[in-house]
Length: 132
View 1 (cartoon, rainbow, N blue to C red):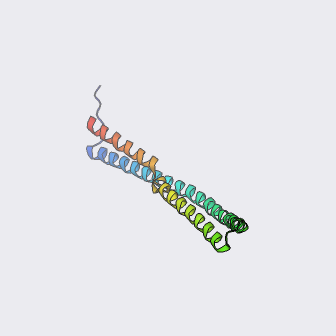
View 2: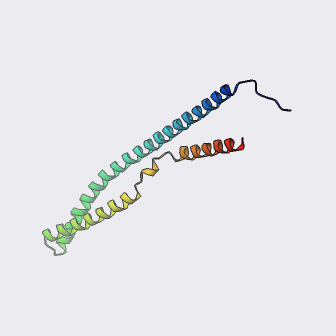
View 3: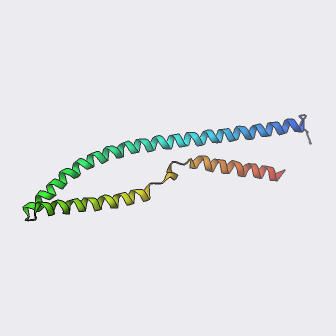
């Protein structure tokens, strides 16, 4: 049976445009919520990292003092022992910074699920348009 919708073409077009607008608003809301969630998770991780850095600094200071003392007891002058330990610690710090910068990416904060959903919606709309 061929049944026609009694509404006018303008009314149907208004409904379609309203639905597309609602869909886009929902996608933007999803992206915003995903970014907020990712930022909260990153903030908590950053707090843990700051605490770890403070504790590591204290521990490194104690261990550096112990290493300097051990080198002095082994017969090296205090100046050279201090320089040697300082250079080793600095080298380790530089290596850690390089590795950390390589691993730090802003893409981990981006709303990837919302982007995939938006692409799927666009593909669905395109297919629906091509079918008509």
